[in-house]
Length: 389
Image (cartoon, rainbow, N blue to C red; front, side, top):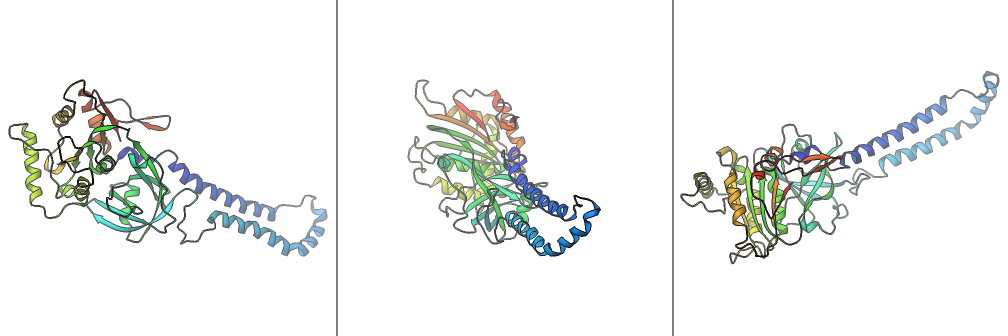
């Protein structure tokens, strides 16, 4: 599936401990309280059998007070465990999760859908902070039965309510969280925590080339929205099926006589797109982003968004030579020309990232970039910052 495999398998540091430690702490405290109360009731006398009758007579007179003394702390313990909250309360829980409602579920393909979530109350929205506008952002979604969570990147929603959140979620064959979400009916409560900044792009970005596989298109669209009117952004979007990119066609022309694979790729995409009456939700977002203020191209030097689509089931793949030519075309016309920063970003399933840039690595419990490998390691990438997402 086109899910961000590394992040799917391993939530951000602190995600699982927050979930597990909170639940374990409550169980332990409640169990300890009950156990101590039981031990107090069943404890043998400190002075042996010779004063048994005296203890029995005293017990008869103080039993009501003993019962009251026992139930008061027990009541406090139960109140502490429940957090003093009712079932309908939507405020943040102790582990930082807030409740949203599944308002809309829009199918994109047979295995993926866009989930639109709205806050249960105006006071239960996720917090926002400085720097989010120039960062790739995700939130954690909880699977309450298994007490696990995984990160999902927020889908840009130009023109939509700022309080609602949308996610492109593909149903994994063995995905505990994605399977749980796809089974939920409309109106269900979903717990979120975040947002988290997965990557903050530097100031002064001039060119972006983004290799996106499957749901990796979501962070690519975040970058396109955040840099609208500021940088040239070119997205190469690999899709599993035609449904994923219905109604979309590549912006890169396919001139005759230039690489037969590109001619074939462009012809297939263009001809099929012309016969498509409706655009997929993702393609609709792309079209909206292209018409944002400061995004419409008026001159060759005006920053703009370009997107090329590729479909696995039609044997139309992103080719290394196409990426190489794209990177070369972004180089300055003369070596002395001052230009901004150039980013080459890769996002998608683990195999997609590994093929293009090599695997990411784990060090001291944290995921790091690791050395550049894969196809891109054979390119001349002077002046490009390569980032695996």
